[in-house]
Amino acid sequence: MDTSQIAAELDLLLAEPPERASLRAAAQVTFGEGDALVLYGAGTLGKLTLDKLRGIGVEPVAFADDTPAKRGKRINGLSVMTPREAVATFGERVVFAVTIMNPLLRYLDAQEKLKSLGKVRVISFLSLAWQYPDAFLPYYQFELPQRMLEKAEEIRRTFNLWADEESRRQFVAHIEFRLRLEHEALPRSAGEGYFCREFFPNLPDDTVFVDCGAYDGDTVRAFIEQQGNRFSRIYAFEPDEINCRKLRDYVTGLGEDVAQKVSIFNAGVGAERGTIHFNSTGNMSASFTETGGVEVDVLPLQEIVKVNGELVFLKFDVEGAEWEALKGAHALLVQSRPLLAISVYHQPDDLWQLPSYIASLDLGYRLFLRTQGEDGMDVICYAIPPQFQSQ
Image (cartoon, rainbow, N blue to C red; front, side, top):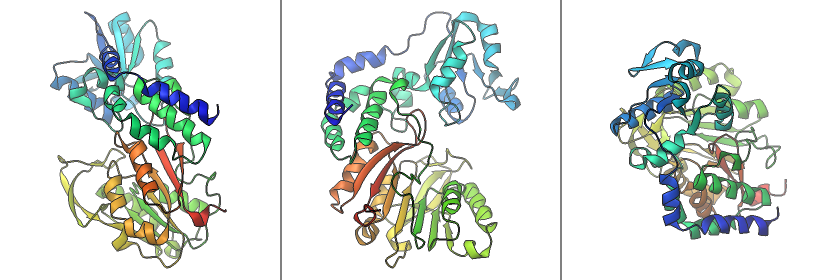
């Protein structure tokens, strides 16, 4: 499929009248009398879904989960069964809502597994979100399709910013998924994470790596596995105290020669210095939120990261704070033209607005889009600066 065909496909998707999309979303899920709603996945998303449903008077009958340690227990007052036990208990009236969104089990695989148990219905958590939008949406990049169609012109403009046909194809695939919840439309994960060898197979020995949203050191680990001790400096920012402690332990274990070149900040990144409420969980669901139980420092990158001509590799995965983080890195972008790997799936408009903002800086970047996760997650915009495009 060439660019003109991909553009025609995008135009067709965006031509749907918002009113029709609204009716389609409202009809995504229907529950009949006697249907038994079972939440498949009793983790963070499952518990969130249960809480939201109870808030609107909808009570699932059980959790289903394959984790041995959870079976037979009650979580938030709801029994945890195996999927097979749920089918045996509730029969063909079972409606499994898949409340798992992680790379270990994509929705299509979960759907196939559950349907193999018998004549049951299987829906995505996102279908529930469309059915009860006031309770669930927006959630990450997901919103009602009619809201998305109102932004059609912005989406079309960003389509033309991508530097290769594969980026345009993946961009349209994600638009289709978010408009229609057709998981089959999604690109498969490349599985490379942030260091996509397609764009930068070799990083210079004096690279400065800036990891915003460093989690427990997973991306720092990947960088060091690639570079060894061949780098100038690492700046790692992680606002969750538990995750940051794991990061420090990992870096300490690398030995003094490497550890002395790593600066770790138990802080977030933003447009200016300050503090912000944070939901500290000690896992990948930690996030900035007004209802967060702790306050964490926020730092602008341009005041912290010091470079003198080295190549800078800047990674943003900051749970929806990418806009503020970019603002706080403006001077660094202008002065150093860093390699950028930015998550564009945390907010509904990030997929088109963040690349558009980078292009508006007129710094000579070429923009690429690649999928590094499943179910619409871990979608990364790579911005390649002029000094690296000849490599």
